[in-house]
Image (cartoon, one colour):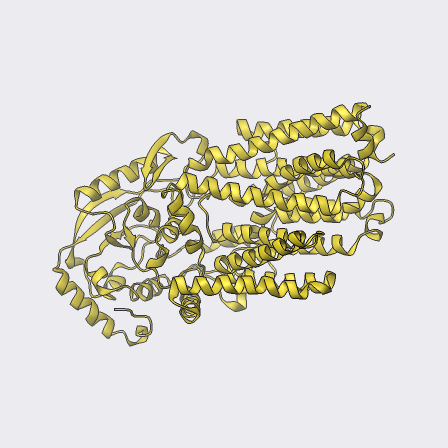
Length: 638
């Protein structure tokens, strides 16, 4: 009798153990999800999240986008619907990601793993829902740096989930499923193009290969999906830039400016194979976890008690990590790939490679697709592809799910899926906990934050140093006469979040990225990128981006400077590009930046400079300065 039917009969000890573990797994998933939702109102990274918030709040203010992405337009309307509440926007993003991950995991299980449940359709659907939810919790690894504000990475991940959901729906019987599936493929492709064009192009090629190899008769529906994506793109182009020509010009100009930045986004550097850097401890952990997982799967019905107790212990450890913050294993991003890889490798030796001999074309295609999706997700990034791809680690786990699917034919669905689910939950808890303990460019331990800090549309709970920084900056800026909506040029190189908090308009770009002196060694050590030599073109990019602004706005703009800061822009050359100098401003406010446990362990003095020249004179100087820069005439919009 197959194991799952035996489980469904409800007459043995394995029934009680299985149901208890399923209930505990469901509770663990709910707690992990609620955990992320609760802490979504905690913390704020003032550089990257400042970029995301400025892009989302005011996407129509900018003629170019660095990086070349239109994610801000996609999230702009949800941002307005929640009234600019950052915490609510984050919760909505987490919920969408989790829902899409759950849907995809459920479809994979129903497609490949229900062979052994023919007599328990209702119960098996419930099992699939619980198990897929647990596996989908790994989608929350996307927030492992504790940067929860939706970004182009977030939209890219959500887009890939939509595309794969659409492909699996289109593979089901029934015209409604097929039509809905291909529409979802089209919508997902459009979202991916808005988020990360490089990933969108690569994903389109993968979808075509998948369809041509497995579903030759689906070429016409695939064309329909392409038309859906094209229609959405045309509508978007007219809403943003008045037509396709304007949108193409925006993306081309954005790409040229990004290359000028010198941050490693050149086409020649895009197609590369990065080294998977790891440590002995993480390699050991990955091997041991994979062995334990395989033993739990393969021990069989004769030894149900020991694996069940082990799984219960792992679930309890997962809950302890989430609720108490203790983490004895401390999973790193490399382990998110190594564990699935070692699991698949070990399974190939089961019964002389039986799992390879009984693979179906669908399971093989899905395994390979899921394996490469994280790299497609990372395509075009200037960071290590393994590091970036780990944010989409759910796909690696789904590759394992597809590769081990032949076990379903041998009546081992539950015995295989439950350990995979528990493993995904443990990895999720460990990775998310690492983000809470060491959030990017913030004070360590988000759980210890206690300062309620008002921000546009709502409030966040921040560390005391960041709260005091914002409170002081806001009080001094308002006292000096800085009004809501005032244009500001940020020459600190890293304070885009401050401009958002002050409710000003960041000129040039949502974040005028500053220099990265001395960062090469750290980048090489962390991400194995010896070609990344800092950002040599930051000042040139600032000049070009500000050249796109109207002189009327630059004439009345305030300036934020950080003279001794590690990433400040060159104040003299950038200001001279629009006809301004130090003598044309007065220091209206001064405050110190908060220290953190990441890139900025020291405090630096920042100044808000208020223009004192008559606006007419400043505007005239701006026009004259632009005339003297013939190289930038194609960018300038007066």
